[in-house]
Amino acid sequence: MRIRVNRSDGKTGVYSQQDPARAALLAQRFDPATLFCSGPIVIGMHNPFSIINTDEVCWIEVETALELPHILPRNIERLHRLADRQQYESLLARQWPGWMKFRRGRKGDPLEALIELSLRGGESIYLRAVGAVGETNLVEEFFGVPAITASIDGAGRLYVNPKAIVRARVYHSRDQISFARGFWTAEADDI
Picture 1: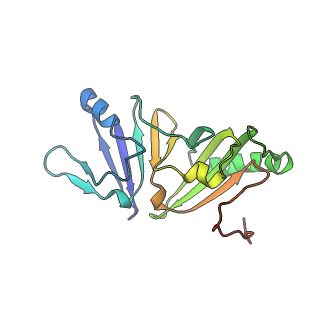
Picture 2: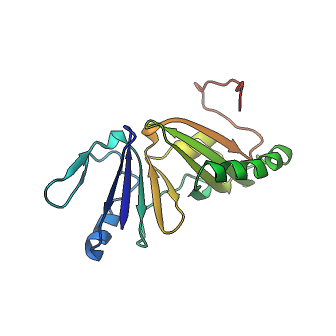
């Protein structure tokens, strides 16, 4: 098991666990419901060890063949981390014109979205979501979870701390979006 922990100071710690029994136990600790709200993360075996404040963790990536806990937003069937900005822009150039032309918005219609997350540490993460249009507003569907959990290339998961997101730009296939009262609604001058 290999773990990368990205902090809000822009630094990423890389850790590994080679012992199969300890890796299996550690895999259970990546519960999205409590990962970023259960107190500090302590990493280490003996001397030295690290204590990481979960409020300052932007994301955790876990590479392993073990089954890892995950929670998908309602109505989302797949959420996957894209390799980089180039892959994101390529998909956006291909998908966006079709979304603008054949918009879908009724409950149960197919939904696809490309999401750019800008994090406190200055890094960006790119995600692709696939699912169906639901009754909840799109913001709550994506960000109404204690940790955003996405699959990664290879085996493993990415866990994003929603409190570390500075901005999320969402391109989507829905024709209309409803926002809860209190949201700022204005057209963007640039896209």
